[in-house]
Image (cartoon, rainbow, N blue to C red):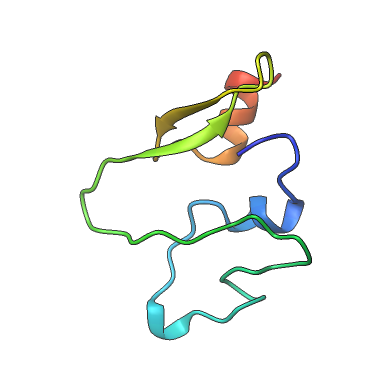
Length: 78
């Protein structure tokens, strides 16, 4: 997550899709030209970390995987 994340990819953030239902450009990367999104496995009850860019120093940091883009943006950007 950073300030270059597209609106298309933001709308899919934290969405869960079955592997059988994945379709590139619809609900799986690559969503658009130069897309940087990726997919990760999802397991019930998992608590992991995801990476986000700190816009103050440009370094990447780990945040809780339950934090969606808009929550990250309001907590770390606004």
